[in-house]
Image (cartoon, rainbow, N blue to C red; front, side, top):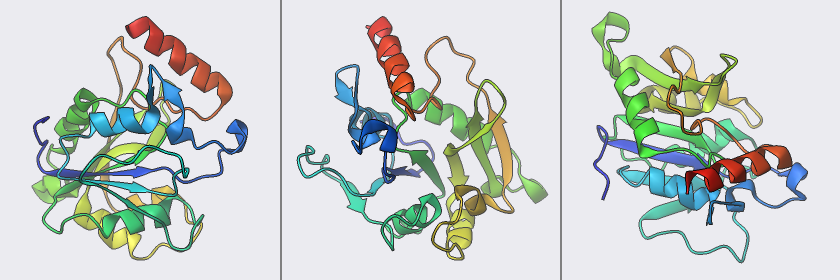
Length: 209
């Protein structure tokens, strides 16, 4: 078992239409011999709770023991409402929650540890419980669905979101530390939005073997 990083939970969002993949769920795409979801579950093994939000294909392999699956309400209502549904399964005493898109094949335990280090710095009024950390891409864009956040503040914000609300509304009034990936390995924020992204991910995964 991977060591817990300060008692964090992980919410993995697998909803979405995946139109660019003819409706195939991006989380079930195979990279390096495993589905993206399996790779992400391995990276988050140290979480005290892991919640997958969204529908999975009928023929998908069962989730590992202890991993919960829930649906957003109403179905298809977007990432903010999906996080709201996932938070209902996060223990009240869990200080931090990783909120992750379900198409991140190169998320690693080390990447989560790096986020934890940045999120643990002094926040407003010296309180690190008010600070979150997210990765930014090579162009400096914040990757909202690849971050670690104070659970109580996200829970407060999630209680107010309407169907279709963007994910960034979950992080209002949270001090945000942006994190860049300096390692030579593929970046943990890399998501498989298009067939070209998937081809790139598979090339990188082959090179890592």
